[in-house]
Structures are given as C-alpha cells and as structure tokens.
Amino acid sequence: MPVAASPDGPIGACLGLYLAYTDLRDGRSRADPGFLEQFSAGVPQAPARRKEGNMLRKIARRAAVVPLAFAALLGVQPANAASGGGCTGAYPISSCISISGSNAVGDFYMNAAPDISRYWYRLEVKTTNNGSKWTDYLRLDRMGRFGPIYQPIYTIPPTSGSAVTIVHVYTSGYVQHGTYTSPRVYN
Image (cartoon, rainbow, N blue to C red):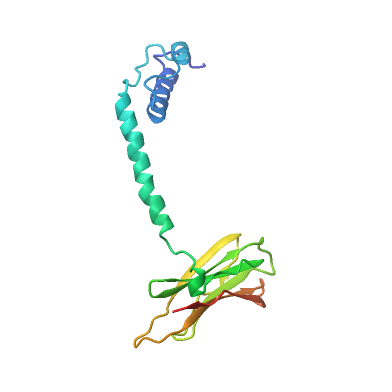
C-alpha cells in the first residue's frame, strides 16, 4: 500500500526537515512559499533568522579565508632570477629549484600524460657543498606538480655552494628514460 505524502505522514515530516535544512544552509528565512503550501502544510518550519546575523556570518567566513590565502602565497616559492633557480619550463618535465631558509627545495612539473616510457621517477637535490638527497622510486601517475624535497645547503663552517634538482625518469621496467636538470641556485 503506497504511503500518502501528507504533512502528518513520514514523507511530509522528512520533506519538512529537508526544507528546513535547505533554508538554514542557504540563509533564507523561509523556503519558496508555493512549494511549502503544496507539500508541507502543518509541518513545523525553521525559525526566521535575523538578517544582521547573516551578514556577520558572511563577513566572518570571508575574513577566515584571507589568512589562508595569504599563508598559501607565503609557501615555498621559486627562487628569483638573481639567485639562480626557478623552473626550466621544459617539456615533458620541468624541474625546479629554490631556496627556503637553509634548504634547497627541489620539485618538478609533469607537463605530459604519463605512459609506460615515463612511469617511475626519482627526485634528487644535489648540492656542491653538502651532498645529495634522493627520493625512492615513485610513480608518475598524473600531470602536475611532484615533490618537494628539501636538502640543507648551508654548512658549518659556512661554505658557498650551489644546488640543482635532477629528475630521473624511468620506464615501467626501471630502465632510465631521461634526466631533467633544473637551473642552478646559489647560496
């Protein structure tokens, strides 16, 4: 036996709760009056909300986003041209290097769709004064950014040096396909 969509039945109660939820979610004090009259007569509605409270909530939400956006902009950025560094912009792999604090930071961008000839990679940050750091074999499974890895570049006692990122790309059978070297960054 079908259940009637009456305001006192289970469907009417669920519909009333859904409408009250969408009202609260969308910031409206009432749902579309025609829709409510047709399907939920007698079902309790969400209380009316004060308009000034809505404005304060919107301002608070937007104010919370500003520090997050600012923090993202302060993340590791490519080195400026004066210190060397940056990205090669090459196809299919654009290797990048920068300095963040006392570390050389290496990453790269995959600018082509991965296939069996570009299947694995190892990322290396190589410094002239403090050795190298390598990742394990990792999968090239998408386009976009890979990394970063960090290698300390400042030494005690202080010595000047430089660093590069080298992306080693391998086939699906672990045969080396190519190496892609970033610009050099100096400390």
